[in-house]
Image 1 (cartoon, rainbow, N blue to C red):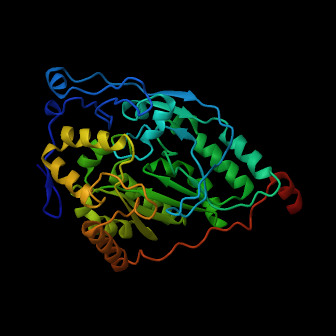
Image 2: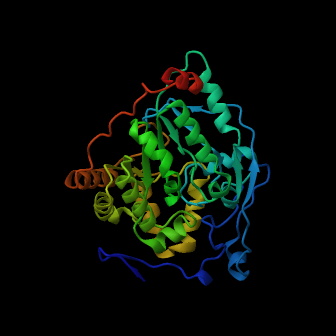
Length: 369
């Protein structure tokens, strides 16, 4: 039994009782994507009788990219453009809403999503071309809105760092979302951007329970290291927000008050949350994970997810995707709002500055000389 500070607990299935579990991977299976002609499904009885599956190595493939920015008109988010240097994410977060994107490549949103990573090597060059276009109007770019820009492969490729260097050259505002303490590697760039009010960092923390995090998001930084990153960003003068994302009914929602308090102690300026959402293949993958890792909690978690989603596992409608509906979702919202008010984390973050933007950095340097 893994006891929590609030008196609750989670009974984890030991490795021998978790059929299909791969060390260091979140998904239990390589379930077929929705567009494949043949459907692969794991046979629970066969899995139980087989030895643990072999580990799967990560492969990284350079991917063509024709544009630097992805545009959206979703009223659920406060940005209209984003940059994702990578497709697929080695962090392996079982609940990741980006998993279904691998189905469009003919790959599985399961193990494939975590092990077959595509790096958009030309992203900085495409961004420079976009910024140079006549009529381009700067606004905050969300870096890592889909997959984490600081996942492990970034250590070698440094693609995210090149993107930040490009944004700094052009004096372009950026908002970064990550679950990795690796963001501290680029503290030198972040400090320069921050001096011109051009950056904020959103550190996503799902749980403070390191054992649960290890199974749910196996290759992301530990919760303690993420809180340390929040503190170091704050000390360096970089605006930092903690995202309690996702809040999982019946599994992590009991931590809301403790997590918000930890965010405040670490120096976060604001805190927000997103309710668990399970689009496409993610619902089945998450259900597999529950039965493999926390079988005693699976039934209650799924029941509470449905209670917050109008009887389903997912609500695609704008306005409901991030917050859910029903009494239990309302209770989560009320508790979170009370917690952030108590710790002074309910203030709106200042708008990032667009007045520094320069389409041509060379001309900017000449003007200063």
